[in-house]
Amino acid sequence: MDRFNAMQAFARVVETGSFTKAAETLHMSKTSVSQLVQQLEARLRVKLLNRTTRKVNVTADGAAYYERVVKLLADMDDAETSLPSASASPRGRLRVDVPSPLARMILLPALPAFHARYPDIQLDMGVSDRPVDLIDEGVDCVVRGGELSELSMVARRVGDLQLGVYAAPSYLERVGSPSHPQELAGPDHYIVGFTWARTGKALPYAMQRDGESLKVRGRYVIAVDDGNAYLAAGLAGLGVLWLPDYMAKAHLAHGELVRLFDDWRLDPMPVYVAFPPHRHVSAKLRIFIDWVAELMAQHAPIIDRRNV
Image (cartoon, rainbow, N blue to C red; front, side, top):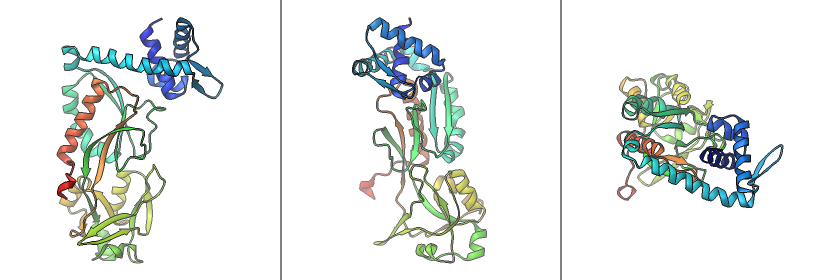
């Protein structure tokens, strides 16, 4: 029995609650994972997991052993990555999930430079705005805009997205340009709705100017749950958009979007990198998080709210 592989298999079963999901994230067969855990239990002469046809639960002994195993695996990883050759060339596979516009417009264009610097790190990148269960899906980290609802996650704030209100010239030619945000809630205008996957709801947009504060919730002909589709709907003239400036910049320069309400302020949208609290932050994961933070510092630096 390979004790390292057995401990790794056991830890992943505990984290995912499933032999099948553990096997998928470890790129092993379910049979192999089950055999490793059985061999580990036989060696320790203790039952680590209670298995049923529907669920796997950790025993009291298993829970205590899991805490030691996680620390031991972390120490082993640190020992390997502390070597000069390992720290200079970290290797391995990372599963990450990022919002689709951020991937398309910021991360993927910068990825060749990342790969040139770290050629042995393999990224499996999920590109979506859907909520991701990091444990069940074996994802190492997610990049997300907005306040995090998963309070148990460990999160690092890496940027603040500046927001603006935009519309396509075709839309403004058809219905006219609004002079006040409250007009967007009236009968003459439409917004493009964005449904947040975490809540299933379209949230109102808060705006401020000279002590005046309001929240806009307009009518829409279409609501979407993907950032790229949201932008495409606005470019097609289907309604007014609330966009991060990085998404609007090129379209603004080419005359495909017009900025509205320049004298109104919107609170910036924070950007976080989040990962499970019990997941060891390996060298390759630290490198990826630092890389994302460097990119966001260029495109959407964190705002010092003491100066706002």
